[in-house]
Image 1 (spheres, rainbow, N blue to C red):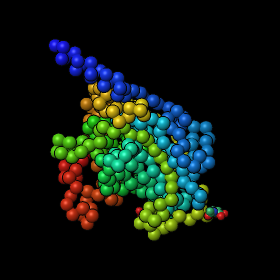
Image 2: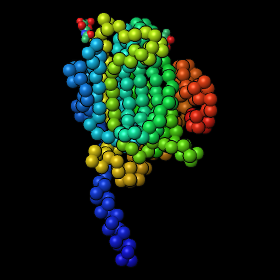
Image 3: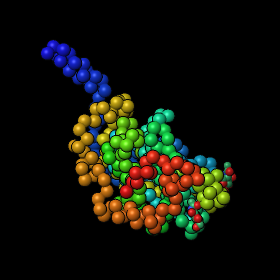
Image 4: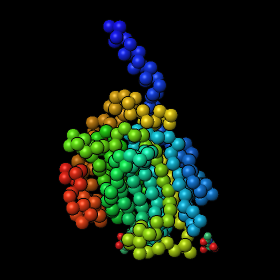
Length: 294
Ligand SMILES: *[C@@H]1O[C@H](CO)[C@@H](O)[C@H](O)[C@H]1NC(C)=O
Ligand SMILES: *[C@@H]1O[C@H](CO)[C@@H](O)[C@H](O)[C@H]1NC(C)=O
């Protein structure tokens, strides 16, 4: 009996030290509410609800979320660099910190005028990436804003373009495959010069006379479990019953029938590279590819 109380006491003391993960559903179209510039502040301009971030021959630029999150959904509307964007990469991603970090990436690879952007996605688990997929889009991403989202819950990570799923990374822990679930992640975006690899395998270089290269953003939305910085690493333990959040409801544990069809359509018509089928690079099929993900 007494022993029980002591353990309870210790537990609640530990809990108080750890703090709790505040589940906050933040929804805002204002950049400042959720994000802050993280480098090259002079490469940012604001027009109403639109943020422009530029790359020139002096610098790229980047922004990051003010908080870190453990599960939820992040959406940003982006209009990519118009005209000649060859050599440039605009990245939008979630990442945790440290050498064994997790990361979910959208990287938009620019192209010469009139040639299509490529969207590269990647997933890092415990510091290991090498899970690239590449697709082209069914619209010109430089003409209008389109929404790009990452849904992250205990069962799956879903990459969405205008709410159409383009990639699913499924939790296969029951097969012994690690799944990102206990490191809070920040949300980031940046634009930089990557002309050593980005466009047509690095053959096309950035033409600085066509700059500055501007990516525009609006419609920022984060609906997630927000983790106070000081306790971020312990957030997982404190986040309680996952079922209380909409993104962990049973219906969110896998794609619905309509979404599954959408994903099949994207893969059949727009995918240009999938690490899962790159046998030159991976003679042994990566484990998670053997249990196919859709
Ligand atoms: C750029 O355009 C070329 C020619 O259409 C295409 O092969 C390539 O995949 C496009 N994207 C990138 C990033 O190179
Ligand atoms: C950057 O580009 C501008 C315009 O093309 C040019 O005038 C300037 O000298 C360049 N600066 C550097 C550091 O290359």
